[in-house]
Structure formats: structure tokens, C-alpha cells
Length: 209
Image 1 (cartoon, helix red, strand yellow):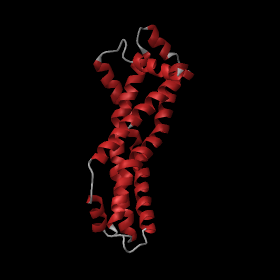
Image 2 (cartoon, helix red, strand yellow):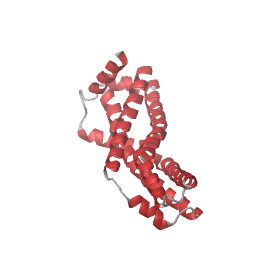
Image 3 (cartoon, rainbow, N blue to C red):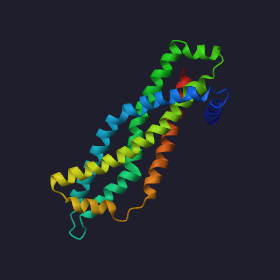
Image 4 (cartoon, rainbow, N blue to C red):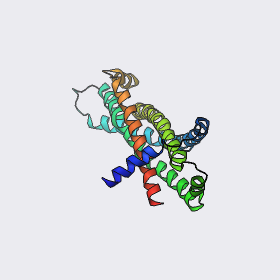
């Protein structure tokens, strides 16, 4: 309960004595570059291979002639959109976001930049923490959408190039019984995960420093 109370107070402190809006715009853009743009490459590789493995493994286990091949596309689509894209992407980014936060705040603490901000009357929590949280909540859902698309594309390429199913079977499976709410649900999960990852890592780093 003590840690929960510190977490709530830490979050409330960000909205006290804030800086001008233009200051946050620049800081949020910098954090979007550090957290999101620099993570595109690793997200691309992981999501593509996850989709490829999911499609091939599903095709390998569907040995019954009573099950049509387009079911593989359905399974890969639902696995990717509901679980693999938001969960795996956020797990991977948790390490990157955590290391980015630890490195940035640790350097600022050692060089006494945080103390200098406090002396100048600047709310260090609002100036340093809020842009990181906003940057994570903007870029991580975008990366989850990219990961979902690339995962489905990876399954398509792996399955068709290996001859496990045809292009029409896979595309039919993707389009069959599609529920648009699954995409909304994945984005909601990405928003929640990005907020928790960034805020908890920031709180832990500030408490340890």
C-alpha cells in the first residue's frame, strides 16, 4: 500500500506547477523519437517472425482433412491482433523503454541536472516524466498496429512461399468472421501497457536515485 500511495502521489505531482505547452511539445517529440522511432527495426523483425512461425506451426498441426486451410488465416489473425502484437511488442519495448529511462534519468542525477531543475523552481517530475509517458502512449500503440500488420504479412509470406496454403486461402481466412472490435481492443491494451510501463519504470528509477 505504501508503494501504491507513492505511485499515486508521483502521478499527481506531474500536474503541479507545469511548464508552458510549447515546452512539452518539443520534449514529447524528442521522447517519441527515442522511444518509438528508434524501436521500429526491432519491432519489425520480431513481429514478422512471430507471424511466420504462427502460420507455419498452425499449418503443421492442422492435419485433419475436415478443417479447411483458410482457418489458418483466421487463427493467425486472431492470435496476432488480440494477443501477440500488443503483448509481445510491449514486452520487448518494456526493456528498451526501461533502459532509456534509466540511462537518461541516471545521467541527469549523477550530473546533478535534476537538482538544478529543482533549484530553478521547475517541477522535475512534470518536466522529465510527463513527456516520457506521453511519448510512450503515442508511439507504442502505433508500433502495435505496425506489428499486427507485419505479423499477418509474415504469416502470409511464410505460408505461401513454403507451399502450406495458397494466397486465396490465407486472405479468405483473414476476412472471414472478422470482428473490428478486436483491433480496438488491441489498441486499448497498447495504451494501458504503454502507460504502465513508462510510469512504473519512471517511479522505480526516481525512487532508487
